[in-house]
Amino acid sequence: MANNGFWTVGLEGSVDNMNLWLCQYGLKTAQPAFGKQGRRYFATDENQIYLDTGSAWLPMFLIDPAVGIGGLRTLGLGAQQAAAGDHVHP
Image (tube, rainbow, N blue to C red; front, top):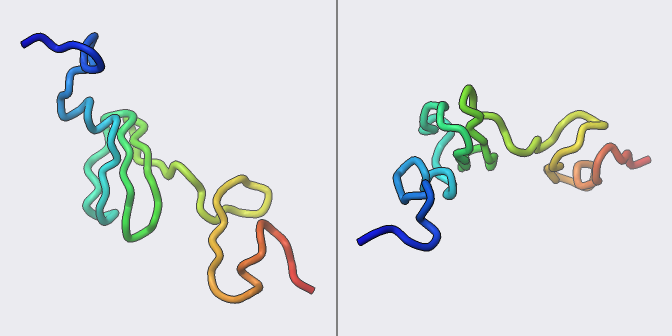
């Protein structure tokens, strides 16, 4: 039976093509070697999503970057850490 619909024109459901559309997950230490650009991996021990650039795994989102750099902020513990961005409580 010939491929038709979504899986035609070079989008056959091979393992590599499926990995580009899905997100693998597990511990950071179990992350596969980089080299297949476009794959995503969710490190469950870090709560971080990584993107395979073909030459490295890079975080897709900076979770708690320095002040002035866009990213996701962690709430941490207590009222001091629950403030957004670089807000300081008096």
